[in-house]
Length: 408
Image 1: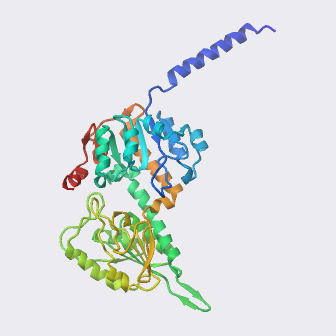
Image 2: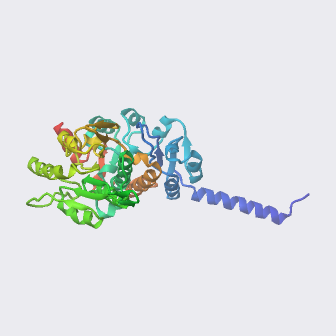
Image 3: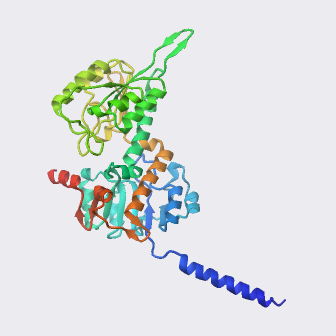
């Protein structure tokens, strides 16, 4: 049967229109962003979720995800494919093809070696603790950006992964403590008598401490909070906590980024004397105190642990940086002097769905700030970029990292 001439014309027209559309709308030479599978033991998070992959693909990026990268966060490979990602099983190709690698944790030296020269890396780097990683990045001329160094300014709030992960960690710390405690949190009146509410003592009123306070209060506990920064008193009281204040002279102890300054031995002694009176009655103690670039201060001494009630619980959220409790052990739950001490080093990873969702939004916001579909913007003097860039073109750019590594 002969085809109608008009039909042939329409088919030809349709064919060339689609070819034209393909040639002029297909994005060529776009930036390849890759998401490797996290190798850290016990890590369940992933750097990008399918939703953020979809967002990046729409913006013109090419996304590669290592096979199984999202499975511990309950994001199957098929969902990534539906979002527009390419799934690659070969780890070497995931690292080697990328223009920009996105991770949760800092890579190992061997993984950096797989990267292209002059590629870029965005992750939690804590570069001031990893001189060997910094050296490897410099050798490969990697432009590296640390999620832990994003300035805590209004413009960068959506990129603040430290806060998003600390929020979840503070919540989970209370649940772990409650699970280990042999009593309930709320006041309860029963026919058999009244159960008094649990008492929770929190060291540190940063993001994690305030979330721990809010969670413990929702569960019905009486909560006391101590912090070296008197500026946090109002926040603590607004959430229903009692603020234990150490009187001091001079300016506040909060840095521009919201971290606590390192305090004197005299001030630390005063704080410990104040806390000694309250820790004896606490059912749960949660410690969150960190000093950027320093070992975590010891706030709960062995003597203080001995003074606590049998069956009490300590959750040391600073255990990865040396610990706020003298008796805590990294990634271990131990019982010492009748007190259960929980030293879980990666609390956000215990909530991998939400932790990955929030982290993916944070890292996507930073990625699209630093780059577009054609590559890095290279505006090194821009405030956010300058704050979080660690290495670039074979040079160590980050002031804090440089000063700490030079002293070590």
